[in-house]
Length: 403
Picture (spheres, one colour):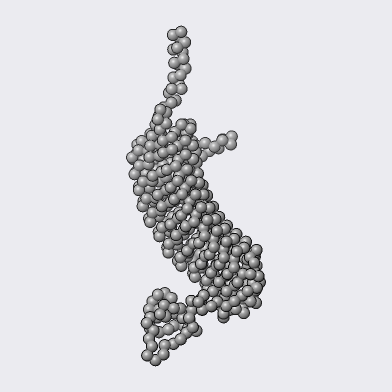
């Protein structure tokens, strides 16, 4: 009986030894896994190794040394002194619930926590400057706050975080990559920091709960499909700093009712408002010289198009597919009325009318009589001038055209 007992103990020893494990994960870093607490601890100084996401016989896995414990690890503690979290380090750790990141970490690597579908919260320390691509994609995060240290978010960094409801950016951030928040189905509002100049392609693609967006005057470019399929977005104020809105930027925004395009934009790209079936009115500024294919296709509710361009913009024949051209009203400058009515496909509108003085905001010129004074005359750059100049002037707060 005693021999049988000893034999059983000997047989269990390898299994017991596997319950706790340790090794290295950098030149001066050590990892330790404790089965009893389901905790992985990283200690030492310096950068963590980068790992890879591999496929063998169609079964993907990471070559991180603790990946074999991924079904057991619920807590990760990274101690002070560690300066980076390696690529793919904790990818697809399905049971991971919490991570402690010290104030010594500078970089969170590519796909570091991708697919951690039980990780619902994370605190990013101020030491972090860069969050690389796919770092937290497909996590269960409900909110994220970026400290002032973070300057760059890589592409797809938070893609398909389907529980993410709120994001707070820092004003030191200068780059938010493509598709960074695409597929965040519960994200409701966004305020872009004034340090950002470009909204990357697909940055908020397919965020159907997004209903409020604030874009600062620092932004000059809105990328392709940036707000594509943001179906709860009813209105958005685009600042005058924006000079380029790329293809499909608002495609599929089925809740969008009205929008004003800034007067520095020169082109309305292909499919920009494709499928915006709630869009009632659109203002096209005088700066626009071309309108692309399917720009307003399936905007079935479109009733008023205010086009301020005196030179008729070039337009693709398929720009207004499925728009009711018999009922919609095209408002154009009086001086260009004949040009619009004789230029296809603009001429396909049954109702083409001249913009009113109220709609143009331009008052007819009336020179001051003897004894009258103009309180203030400004040019369009906001500079005060002594006399009226040829073109548009701002006189006593009103636009005045001098030909």
